[in-house]
Length: 423
Image (cartoon, rainbow, N blue to C red; front, side):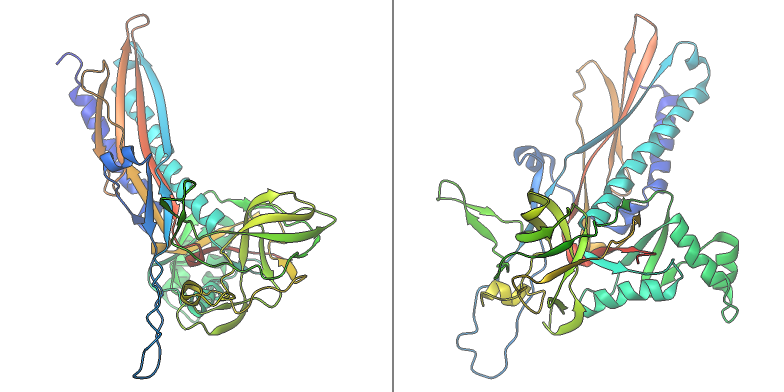
């Protein structure tokens, strides 16, 4: 066919896919979910993904009255991100075959980075565990704090990852390199600035890192009593006849802000509200950490904010609250809120693999649409579409490379962030 890709272009595309596989580091550290094309189109690219049940147990032979409802919670996941990288080759540039290869390499690097950044943003913005370190990054003691926090709350101990900014990662490597009582690890830390597996976390170095600005130094308290959350799987829709799923990752609460503002991203604790082990419901002795995800009304005086996770204290004594309880108590009216991100700095997200999902999808171009296109799927399930169109007016060819995907934070309490030098 006259409009088919040349053999050279096909080789170029194969090389792109091979490099794409190598650069999609983050996608290997999260779960993948493939939504069928027809299902995705008919549901506006949104699917509700189930989260694990948390069961209860009771003592004794007589279990009368212990057969309550098992509430299945779910989380909306959307495929909504299209990233394109485009370039043009004119008739003179196409005399040099390496021009197309070099431009494709640059496009590959950018698209792989876009996917990695999307996953990193999901971890940094939606993870709710917060580890505050008062000094610079030093090594084991830092990461072991995240390990202890997750362990105390009953988060599975396998497949844990932490992504550190270059400066924080190198600070840990420097501490490791100075140790004289270990063998191979200090040598590699010194030669390659390598940290590796520490306190149950596989460490990764970022060449970019999100930053979180300091919370305003203002007095904030809980502004109403009985602000606890009762998880529900579904609720009646507007017409009252149908049931729709409910996203149980968030709760809106009322707060009183004295002489300042709060903002999205701030991490905080509430006086008297400790975290519990998700399975045993035992008090961990540590304050539960929360994040502000949305300013609903106002940012000064008395207002409402959306937080994650919700405060599930079993204040209503329902089956759902007993199953998904995550704190020891409902906060008292006037309970002090203490912010944890006290100094602007880089955030270092950590998570368990099952906490997040990458939802790869694809774009489809009809063969008779007047465009030349081909697509292929990477090892991680990401579909890459390359399209070419020629222009007779200036004898140029436009190339476009596209990826289509979504990311989802299924379990915010299985992910969080660590910040250093927080006074």
